[in-house]
Image (cartoon, rainbow, N blue to C red; front, side, top):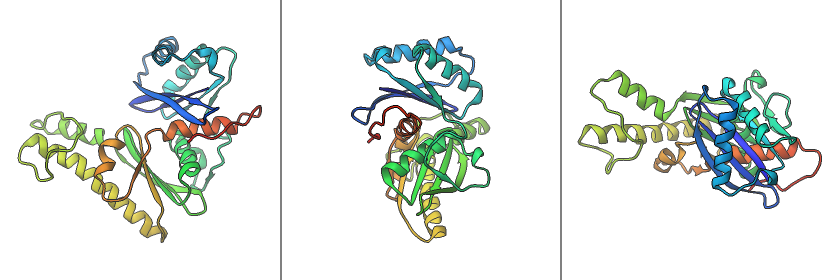
Length: 266
């Protein structure tokens, strides 16, 4: 089994890949906290593993990707404490991914976008649009030659909502969920409608513009913690795959393991 860890600005997602079956066994999210020490992260990881009845001895290695540099080293050290003597890889420039990156500076591509692209191409083919709904909403575009050619970055759903509530004194904090009807008649439901249907319409519009710009169409995949709250309300046909990053990490681990080749995740 392989320990996979993806560090985002809001959450750290960790999971276990069963390389024999080629599938994710489980994944869990914890809050990203720059104040935590490596030992504290190690305790958290160990508790999660215990909850799922996973012994560290059964894990052969791990891999970490991170969009939060101040936390990366501590989380990687935590994984190494849990897996003494075993390899814990980090997704950094130069690691084998199999993705042909065609942007101005490939080194600027965020590890989170890279691992999602790796899994997206492997599982869904190309051309492909990947929408990652986290702290920021990012859109990655893979063309019909399986090349990562760029994308877009915009404020995330929760960030937009928090900013609106912060700047408008009379607007409360609300849950990100669809209201009973599109045209709502009270403040809370109006906010819910704007946040959910507004972001869904934004995704629909961006997907339409991307395919128009490319001159062809393909599949669209949504991932990230908020994908399940927004993508179902899009008019475009969007596949929801919240485990995309975990799958990509496992694929990259396999590509950089010269000992034994294992099946890719499904």
